[in-house]
Image 1: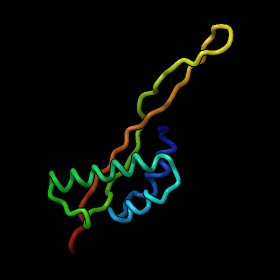
Image 2 (image 1 turned 90 degrees about the horizontal axis):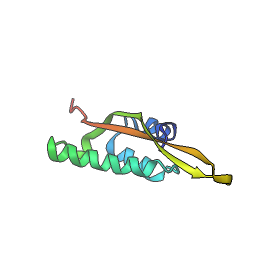
Image 3 (image 1 turned 180 degrees about the vertical axis):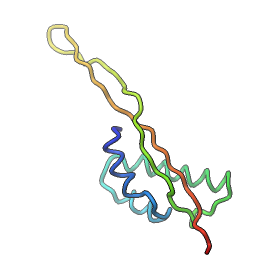
Image 4 (image 1 turned 60 degrees about the vertical axis):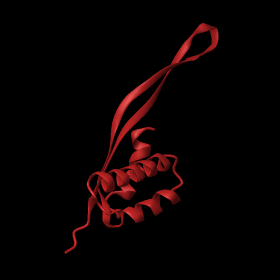
Length: 102
């Protein structure tokens, strides 16, 4: 997915709680929301298994999208020519933290 299409979804969930993030991502009409939803599920499972965080008390502390490499293909055209197709990719980083009890 291109960075700018993924960035508009990430901007909506940054700083929100885990449950609120899941509700937002399930109802968003963008195609980028489903892979981000899977990534948030995976980050919550990793946080609860590796660090013992409670999913109900966690929130998205850091969410960023960085550009990745381009997938380059050639499209056949008339008279034996070809046009390049550059499909952009991105790297998504999600960090969960637990809310303080104070």
